[in-house]
Length: 150
Image (cartoon, helix red, strand yellow):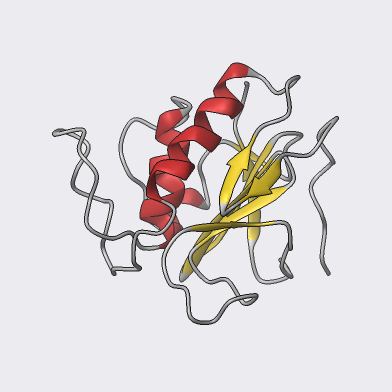
């Protein structure tokens, strides 16, 4: 059964592929969105985004959990990258108000201020890699997790 996260007070917007946080979003949420924007358009690459934390440079491509980790790292919610299985025990159980990570052993994506940040977009099959979407997806086979605080 699809359980949407509780809606934030106002949703973020997508303009030309980049997300813009609502004014009333907590600072750390705005930082997650800004970090996600940095890697929009990078190609999908299995294992991408998991080894670049020490150098603080961008990777050439990102996989699903590497994308989620990179965005959450921007808001200081993770210190190092997690794989999709590790996200299953990250944070607190259930949907969050501003940020919800949906994860299972094979895939992870995050909903931030009502927008989905995911590497498996269905609205444009020609795109690979991390992107923002207003469309949410079915979450039946995913575990919902959220940060313990903002």
